[in-house]
Image (tube, rainbow, N blue to C red; front, side, top):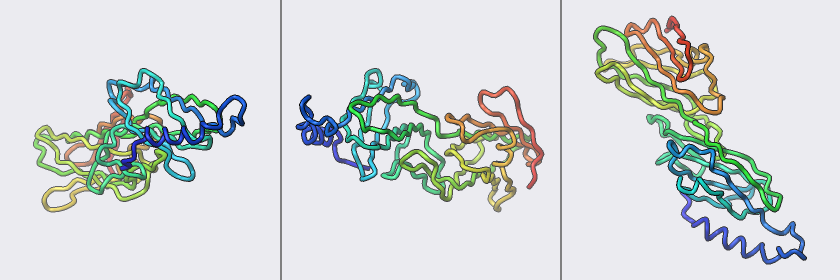
Length: 259
């Protein structure tokens, strides 16, 4: 992670460029006053954000902004050029200089992202930050008389997010063992296709493997929607039928499983 204090960087930048910013001077030499509005952010869910601003020629500044500051405009001085704004919440230990990276074997963090390409070639730019839910909680409930301990894995090809908030391609796998009630929950990043697989495994090896991504797609679930809905999957222990329930939807979707 970057350790250079963002406020010091911006102060130095302001001193350099603002010397030519009197009314009589060429104001195209002046920096842009970037005003970020966080009033749309739900502070009950998001307690702080990591703010990253980059330019085509490199890093501009980064800062952590606490929720207590969301009620007032956030103001920064930035160069007058095209800028990439990325705002993150929930990255935790998965944060990287390139955005967010999920190590193989881990589920996704509960990340919210706002990303925008800004044209800062102006004296002042006002921009509203709207954090989008970029994770999907998948709850799997095994149905049967006696559900033995079973490990369930979700295997895909999205392993994080780039600095501009787009999903990155790479090997992904997360696993969980069903509890005494026969259920478990895992967290997925935003998917880019329907290739997600589900594997059920006991101590002897893989018992069943099927294309859960195809069933999710058939239900009408859209991975491109701005805020991802959570999914509940009811699965009979014989792994012949499943029911998909999408949070906020009234309808359930039932499928016969093809192994």
